[in-house]
Amino acid sequence: MRLRRRVVVAGVVVACAAGAAAVAGLPFGDAGRTPARPTAEAAPVRPGDGAVPAAAPASADSGLGSRASGGGAPPGAGVTLRARPPAEVAEGSPASVAYLRDRYRIDTDEAVRRLALQELSAPLAASLASRFPAAYGGMWLDQAAGGVLTVAATTVEPVRAAVADLPDAAHVRVVPARHPLRQLTEAATRLAATLDATAGADVVVDERANEVVVLTGDRIRADEPRLADALRAAGVPARARARIAGSVVQKACDPRDCPQAPMRGGIRLDVPRDDGTVGGCTTGFNVIVGVRTPYVLTAGHCVVGGRHQLVDRTWHQFLGPKVPVTVESTKPRLAENAYPYDYAVMPYQPGAIGRWAYPVGATQVPSLVNYWCVPDNPRCATRGSGDVAVTGHVPWSAIQPGWVVCATGAAYTPKAGEQYVDSGAGAGYLPGTRCGEIIGKASGGIDVRICARPGDSGGPLFTEADGKALGILSHGDPGQGACTNPNERNSYAPVSTILDRANALTDGGLRIRLATKGPVSGPVPR
Image (cartoon, rainbow, N blue to C red; front, top):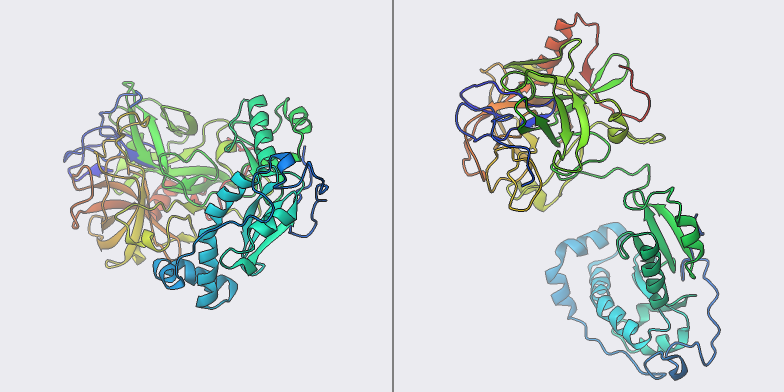
């Protein structure tokens, strides 16, 4: 974004966050200050969930709680825990009570009972693990089965006796398991060491399935040569699975740190300048060129003019891991820096589309705008972060003053020790989504009362309820740091104006249009 007195500065096709001071006369997208410096599967076994594994023999040297096995507590010793009064539980958790009532069609008293049992579960788990280390297999709260706390054990009776006098013992069920939690945890630790990974993060215990799971896709590759042998040697049921399934899409992400598919409007673009410094902008919207080639829309001043005379490339997290995103189009030139024609329609860098596209086989592929909560957005107290699907755009002529709209930006000034490019936002400003009011159109664009900072340039302006694209951030009032001016004014280049202009300059041959579906993996014609 540029401050109100217009001095053209370059940025990126998405939203610009430059590294210069947010002083009147400097563009929000490229203020010119920031140097590039760091500031093999086994079928899951689910005790008590249908197919239950065979229980370990109830012999003297294997039973839970037997003195011969070092199980801990003598037979019949009960666990003593205190529960809070139901009224106290209800008063402190109204939203949780409402969720249980709506989801499971239960009354308030039953919801409160379940929450009280939930409170007991953590100290109960710690107690059982300590008292019965050779037999305790883990626990889970089964809401679908009636709010029952299910405890797994290699030998059932000693544990059943131990929990018999608990508050709400009628809803505590003990089921047989093949392996104690201690054995599974030790196996996970060994597996993690073999694979140079971290137990508890990359190799985890699934208590309900009574097995160890190796999560692949980041630190551990799915084709890791050591993986198959390590799983076979685990000594307990162990399997590998993708940390994030191919059909799963993260529902919003921190604009500074969102290097995974699909490409969204409202995430950070870092743009190296001709002089070696790096500025920041924000992605606006996905667009389509030609038959189906995906491009990204951002502000033109992110890549045109000033210190952007060379062909610009944009990156996400330039200071590491430096994920390639887009490259400036030169044939034809699809960028201008003259408001309201402040836009850049950018193709992906060679090979980059695979990182930003939906996986092959995905059935739902909406084009998205990142809706990331910030403390000064009241909506976040009730709904939280979540992507908004883009359903189309509203022509500039139909946009009306008085509309309430939302905008996402990625501007940020890092704290000591953080490795982000400083866009010039100033300390105290957090990237994310804020909402406000359209206050005019006399500028030829869309003037709004929404806080923004250098680095938000190119970021999307949209309607929250129905996902209509309106514009991308161009320039605005001076400001740095936290949002303190309720009357701050910023201006957005209309999406309809940009599309009409870009198509006119290319004689309509490129058929540039807003995307309502996100990019999908596959060959990208150039």
